[in-house]
Picture 1 (tube, rainbow, N blue to C red):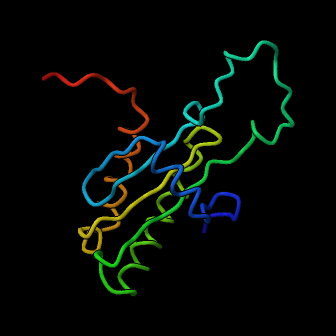
Picture 2 (cartoon, rainbow, N blue to C red):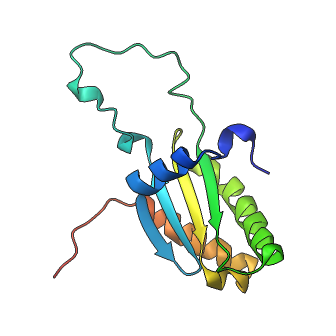
Picture 3 (spheres, rainbow, N blue to C red):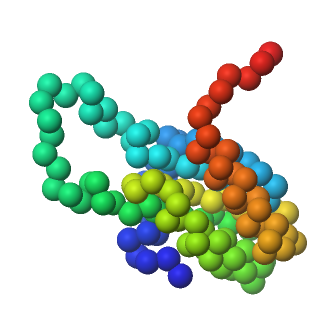
Length: 137
């Protein structure tokens, strides 16, 4: 299970991650990833260095999960949430400190195997971390 410091619990935290992060969907999941550089604290605009207390630089990566009723009944939703929580716990250390990750399960996640959920999650996180390129028209 994720530690309390690694979980998103407040609605405002989820909203900030969904609005400000990069959204990528792969297979049975959609991830919203907010990296520390995207939090809106531009350090280059400040005339003099800012002293930090150390709490900001060592902020843990945090994750939250959204599994709606469209996925299935309560038993199915909790099974999907447990699987995703376990998968994210293994991968959270690979994200930069201070990152925020929201994983939203789509209805196909109810029938997806553990391996497929892991592959979809890995692909979505990798795509969200990749630099954004221009799409050809």
